[in-house]
Image 1 (cartoon, rainbow, N blue to C red):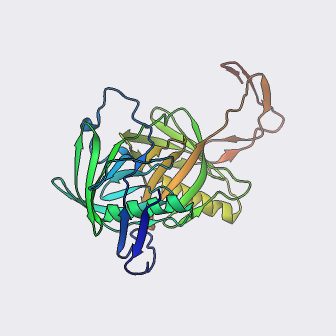
Image 2 (cartoon, one colour):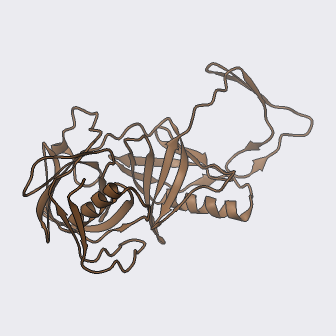
Image 3 (spheres, rainbow, N blue to C red):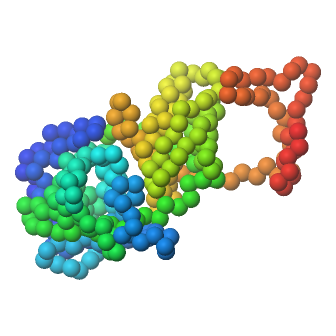
Length: 323
């Protein structure tokens, strides 16, 4: 990724929570970019059958008007168009911007990003992508994928995206790795854990202090989660704040994607702004042939202790459970 020159027409005055200002970015690229990709695993669903919205797109090829050769890179660039906002990974950082469609005309505003630093070539590619995104003029979905045409001060080009393999959302326990809120990325408090598990029509998990559950629907990569029911255990204030922030974000989920690295990313939008929750698969634990003594019972009204003088026992043996 040599032969890149970044020119800043004016200084970056700040990053907003929802829409950042990249002032006068212009990129000179002498070579296009080919991003290594994980293609859709569904052979019956061609790219031309996909819609711009509700599909998780990953950059496969980037060509400018002077050169059709390609370079490979292991850092994916993604785009998800949902309800007037486009979000994704720009190589190093997450980004979010607004967009407007009129026919096949497409306009994208300057993007806000998180503030992680990466190796030089990755950052150069990220700046180039964000600059091209601001210069987008039109799009087309065909058998090649999603083709987005752009023009900047340095010339024109076409970015080709393909549907990203969605992976399996359901029947797996996911553990929260980070919660990105605007330009800030937070990790769970030490000694706490936040999990989520999707079954056919229900989502449940542990939110730092309490258990939660509800129902959900999905359409493509769009995700809608209904109002949550939780247990009512009390924990230290900082844990309760973390739980409240997580549950608020989860209820406002908009879309999801499973990255080539196997991470689940759920995008949300609340009254305070937009963000992304990043989860990793939980390592399997074995309950077979293990006896556990019940120390408390919880429903979704309030926790209960077993009656004095009684014991409850669960023995797990293969797929059989006895109480």
